[in-house]
Image (cartoon, rainbow, N blue to C red; front, side, top):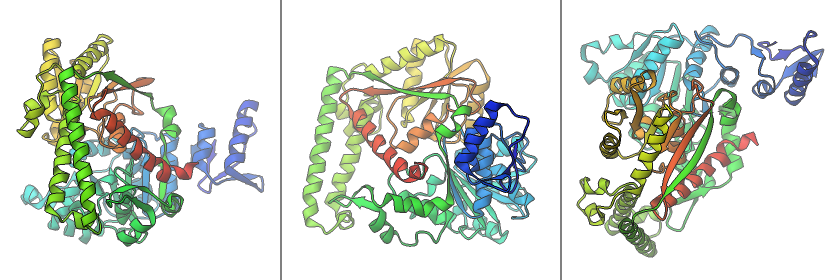
Length: 537
């Protein structure tokens, strides 16, 4: 059964009573009956009821798209304007981007090459996926200093791929503007949430392009103001003034810090015409079930004492900072004060020490900060012991495991403990010091060989990397935001996974900074739910 290009459906005669009942139920929920035909108003929702429908004329890639991907492409074509795509990790945003470009070309909506903007670590992966999923010619753009004599040559291709920082290069930017690009797809578009950042301003130079698309799993990483930064690229005239945006949609405390959002429905209504959402629930039939649980451990007595001391010191510093606010009109004035900023820096430093101590004091012992060594206890880490026991259980099942920590220095520490427990173990790594080619090779070894069953990643590995072979993921520390947590989990929650269920273990030290971090993530999840997903309720 097919939905025509005009969104019309006729119920066929040769279907079973069960199929007829299911189809009729879906059509009554999503369509209007006129002149013997059903006019579909919400074809995406219809396909949730009737998965065997096919969208006529959608799907130009070499590989077939899932229906939720086809409906995403069709919705974007119908919007016919810049749009934000919010789709769960593993939903295949790459395929949507490639097929959308091909559909626009075939409809003569655009001409010439398109531009894909990604994080630096994902350029090589996008290059390979464009070749895999289409007959398009991809080309990676480098800065003028790096490209040198090949500068002009690199602009020959169907889909040009560059990282956000490459657009800071004036020669690259001017060349692209001269080419009059008509299609830009910004992957992980939350990367331009800070409207004042240099990379954001460089991307905004292209917000007059005919079709500007951005994709992310979680657009709000920090607070509602992130929406302002993203839509400066997606639809530049929607929000023109940050002060007006803050006054209308952002809630601040007495210190001037952002603590929440206001007028959420109004904000949702404003962005919804240029927003499509594919929730995890909607694509769940193509994803493994994600089961997240916390694994708790105690701190050793010495470590607990050091952790308590740090948390008390942080609370005292915050109290000092709040008392200082009486001297200032607002937070912006306070941040110009040297003493206020010194306290701010001390708070951040001690929070880092507290987070590191919740994992192992080896991070402080081997770290560069002399101030951190005050809290070294030389006590065995209970969290490391829990981690090793979990890895032993996972490997004994013959399964693979992904390990995440934001601390790159923890990779060497974990390597040492793993090699002591499991002689001859081979370990893959992902971190920000690796170039794209090295990361691509590490992921290939992990996914495609039986020799490498563990990969340790910093947050540099939390975006755009497919670790579909893993059944388990361990978080050594709680993510700094709901976005990062979602991105981490999305590495194993993939449509290409061979597993029916995948498992995430969040390691939490009782009575440590971990418990504070969990509350922070929960708060930031509510921003996403209340603003982005409200339109679905």
